[in-house]
Length: 238
Image (cartoon, rainbow, N blue to C red; front, side, top):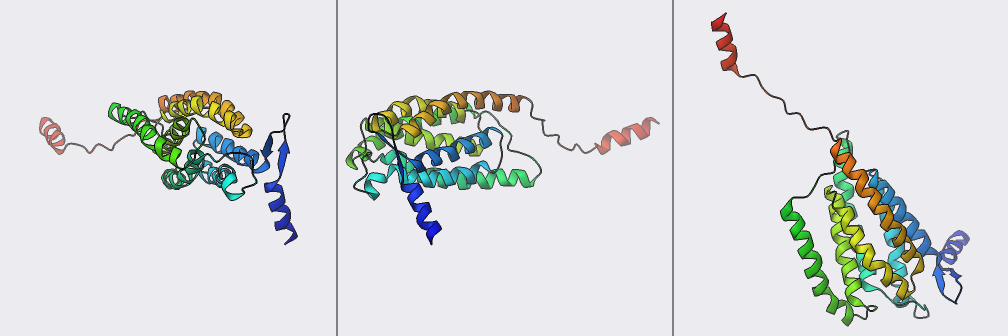
């Protein structure tokens, strides 16, 4: 019981930054899990998914802090909170796909998405952002609300792309980071903002790593059955 009370105190504690800003310890821990998950994803390790889920659960409580605790000073970012729930759902899907590949003795092989899929991803990102912006605004999300909607939709597409093994998912993450970093800093979520800055450089490296893995992937060799006609012809010639 004492351990549980200590654990709650630790995860509820805050660090005071210069200027009077506060930083939740669980925000730092949640982002550490997220970074570990990204590293595992770059190496195409199955454990990246469950590790990421732990981080998502922690960050969900962070972005809903002002709703869960009225005394909390930071605003609620509904898009950021909602994407943690989305991450968990898509992570379960990715975990299953990558687990199957591991059970077959290999890893998920990176591949390029088709041109039609690429167009679809861009359309969904733009249309989804436009559609969700008024919804998040009505729910009281932090301005600029369109940025919150952009990071939500982009994160959904990037996580789904990672589960499918599309190399382009790294580029979607970069697009998310470009918009997400200013939003997080302006709303006071510094730990997540700094993580996004680092993650932006990390995603560029991940893109190169997956491109190389894709180029070095061994082609699948299909078993070709001998043509019985050829054997009969050879026999006749003999």
